Image 1 (cartoon, one colour):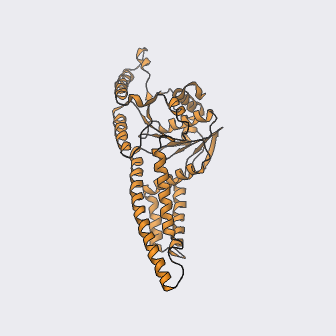
Image 2: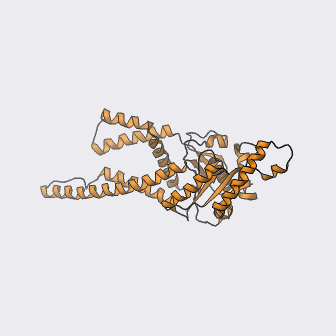
Image 3: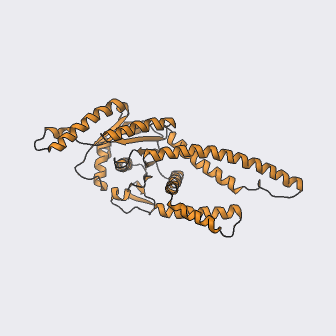
Length: 330
């Protein structure tokens, strides 16, 4: 089944994710898919969760840190400024600590720790994750296209979501029990107030759990979400795809399909003057294409050839969309 038929078969589809290792064309295919859907009259936004990707370069428009930018009719792109988002995130942490503990000012040792956290990769991932949740929660678009981080990071997110969910459930249970006992103590003493009035820590923990639950449910939903994996006809991407299928399966995520990118046209072998190294590369790719068909045959949703130009700008993105989706992308 082609990607166009797959999307057409899912009338309640809203979220389309592209995964795979860096440098294989996830961002290009995300942009091409958003282009195709926008041309069909759908309101679409494309957002990259991969810090190495650049929608600014793909669309050849200034997107970084400018919020949701309309790049063509119906198509919007979002490229967050992670450093700015982290600074906002840190200010929010400071504000919540003041609220929770009644501080006039944050103690220097705590503030130093918050400041140092900006260098942690997890902080950037957390800021990106919150931006993703915020975007999806807005409900402003018909389709949300996500250029996902490499699968190792995605798996870590899912595993951390499960660990945090269990941890938050336990902490919530303990705090609710403590609230009940402390409220009872206040009643017995004849005084008012207590933790049961409003537990800001408990409220924050529940908020985190709701966000994690929403994203985990979204990624597992076969009705509302399509998750395509991108590979090229080489050994390492094939092994990576095989591993990704196994690992995502453990978390209850079923890949919707794979897209094979950067395939040299086999017709070049018939043309005179083609350099020997290119002939060898085409033959190598064809061997790996056979392996891809054997291993992932029913999952193949599209094959995109190596293009004669770098896929940048709306014209080239439109060309990729036409290859991937057929004439309906024009």
